[in-house]
Length: 151
Image (cartoon, rainbow, N blue to C red; front, side, top):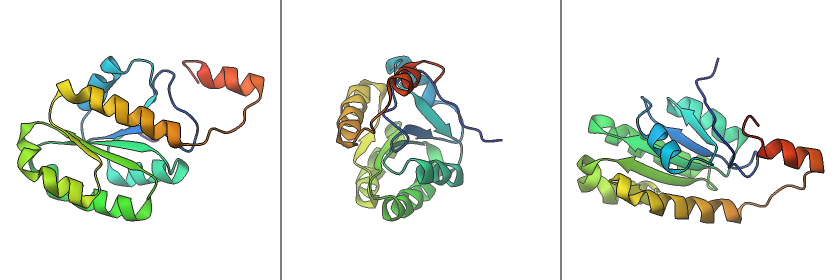
């Protein structure tokens, strides 16, 4: 069984999802609080993230980073950028990651967040990312079903 959870309404289609990858659920609940109408998927490992990206190759990925996770995250983003070029990568951590910020950008992250105060930047980047994704034509019943909170 996958350790993936989804929430509420916003996810444009199966090509693009908002995915949070972190070893423990710390940042995803915060994002849900600030983006309550968005559908947020969670992955607890990079192999699970890559499975989700194969299903939705134009997703926006928020990578939680704390403590000593930096080197592994740099490698994972580097591999992800090469394998999934349509994905937007965001690193979200605390002030400990500030000295490594340029390394995350060099690896392919489009945004590095250090605090909750920057959540608006994430929302703005996410909206821009999802606007670029072409929406599939849905029938009326499919359109209604896609907007239901239990999806």
